Length: 375
Image (cartoon, rainbow, N blue to C red; front, side, top):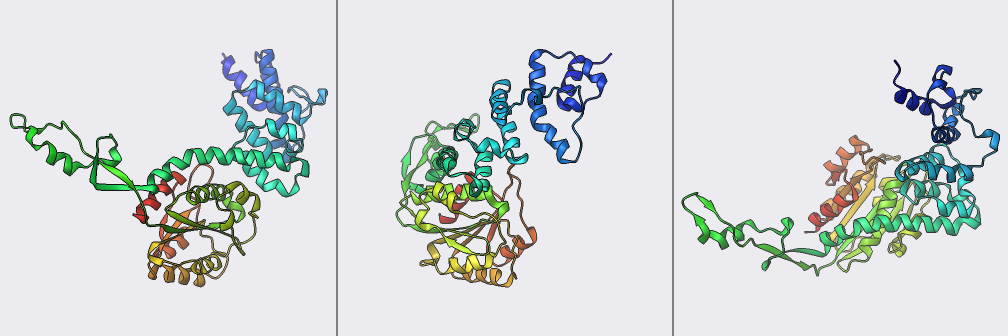
């Protein structure tokens, strides 16, 4: 006895390429619409491998001459939002359905997310002039969403520090002072149970930092680094708004471009960077050396996959010179879409040997790391 629900699911997965015996699966009208919608997109996978479309059997939308825009509207109604966003991502990123990006009205209807922003940034040179303003609006929505998530963590980590001379009773595990708490509650020690009863926990208040730090973000803009570039642009914008930080933003491939003048506007940064090309990290760090004014209060953060395309000697020598001058050297390894580190571990070890701290961190953890280094 074949499980009809399992048969139905496999029928939806395989579409027109299912064996004829699977066509007996019990499918509702809605199931057939689901199958047609999935078939319209994912049959491209078979065609991309040189396979001919399977005749008959499958639910096709060919007969109704549906356009990509019609398909998008139908699919939005058929699937839950999170599933639709994944399908949309596959359509514009994996299967290059650029016709979805040629109509400003359709572009406005797409779900603004990082996958869409990444695709738009990669295609912006080929998009028509009439959609460029819409593209900028989509990217701004994505940037605003990232900024909303990251800003509180950077502000909390970098604007304040512990002040052990002023106390607070606001509960915060981060600010808990165990020694002061024990001292303040010793009179409540229970000799019978041999336990200290805590009636008044002590917390350290936070005060603003007054001495500014120079933070130089040196960002690899080669083609594989788009997600890191996006987050780096937002981080630069956040840092530029803090009174305790002077931020410089440098992007590079084989050339070096100083975007410090637009660091406060991450959208303009993303619309300016030219992704692709080779990688010359040494040249970028040599330029960063010229930006250092107060070494002992300067952080140089290299965001890269550390895959140096040039001879590594200049890169390693630059890192050593900066570290010996008391500049704080941080190497933030690239992360892929699933937040897995993707970088040259051999080069990372060499950089660490010359004085650069290396870590593969999400942007939120980078805030804590930066605060610790500047503390």
